[in-house]
Amino acid sequence: MLVNRLFCRRDMKTINVVAAVIVHDGKVFATQRGYGEFAGGWEFPGGKVEVGETPEQALVREICEELETTVSVDSFVYQVEYDYPCVPSRPWGATCRSIVEGHLHLLEHSAAKWLGAANLRSVDWLPADIEVVNALEAKGVLS
Image 1 (cartoon, rainbow, N blue to C red):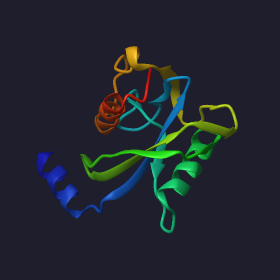
Image 2 (cartoon, rainbow, N blue to C red; image 1 turned 135 degrees about the horizontal axis):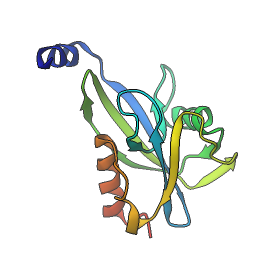
Image 3 (cartoon, rainbow, N blue to C red; image 1 turned 90 degrees about the vertical axis):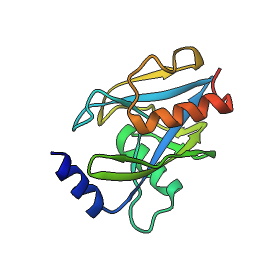
C-alpha cells in the first residue's frame, strides 16, 4: 500500500483548492465532511479551482454549490501546501465577512458549527485545515 501511495503522489498533478473562512460576530463557519475518505472530518468549505478561474471566483462558485450562499471575498488568510494520499493539493484560504445572499444551507456536508476562539479546536479538523486554524489564531481573527 505504501508503494501505491508514493507512486500515486509522484504521478499526480498538484490541485489548487480554495477554502472559505466565513467569519461572523467573531466566529468562523466550520463544516463536517459527509462523504468520501475523509467523511466525519471538519474543514472550511470550498473546493477545486477550475481551469480559467481565479481563486476568488472558485471560492464564490464553490460556496454557492455547497451551501446555496453567495459570499463576498474579503482577504487572503493563508496558503497551505499539503499532500493528502494520492492528492497533492495547495489549499488557499480567504475570509468571507459578508454573506450577500443565502442562508448557509448544507448540501454536501453532514453538519456545521460556528466556532469562536474558545472552541475552535473542539472539532476534529482535517490536516490541511489545521494549518488555517493556526493562522487564524496567530492573526487574532476570532474572538
